Image 1 (tube, rainbow, N blue to C red):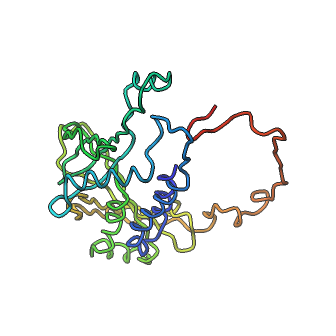
Image 2 (image 1 turned 180 degrees about the horizontal axis):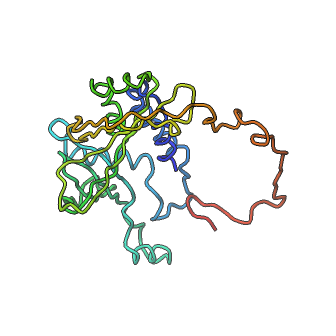
Image 3 (image 1 turned 30 degrees about the vertical axis):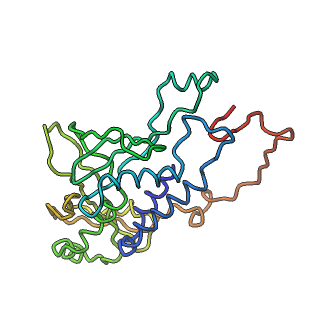
Length: 276
């Protein structure tokens, strides 16, 4: 939920603000994780990683692969769930201690995908395997923001925008995975960048700039291909605003108030991440 909220916000911002969004999105994610985390009175082995544990994961990986001579990008970090028998023993009270906390990490290190398991109490990596299958890890905020900004430094793209009579400062670009079509191997992580137009509307997806496609190599962060196939008029901004404040009757009418209360309190209890 948190990541989707930030992702949606990031993709809806004009390109002029993209440069500052990498650091802002990091701060926002950490803030939301911190405020949404519920600290239980009795920690459960399946509790998600805490903000402090995320920081420890970063430290463990960076110590093993110093940034001074390695390119490291985190694509996924989550709990490496303990063995089921260990959890059952803990629940039954027969275990002498809580199962050790471990993290599962998917990282791109020097343009190679690693699947890592880190022991958090021991502050060390206990498993590090290179992924050799199909596909690549999910896109990160940083590389999407960088890819979305690439067209605005590319002269043929700027000329195509001006040819259509559009304002460059009102153009917003977003990047998408190009899919897998059965190739044995693909040596590049590539995204397709498509653009939309604001200028009088907040609903950029209703105003696509058709005919222009930009292909970006995420590893080298450079444009591999550019196509301007045809010129199609951009849809008008009229009628594209979805906000309630812009609606007219019968849409956007005020709803009457509603009140819901439980005089005796809820019929459930919450202890950390456990609901009974």
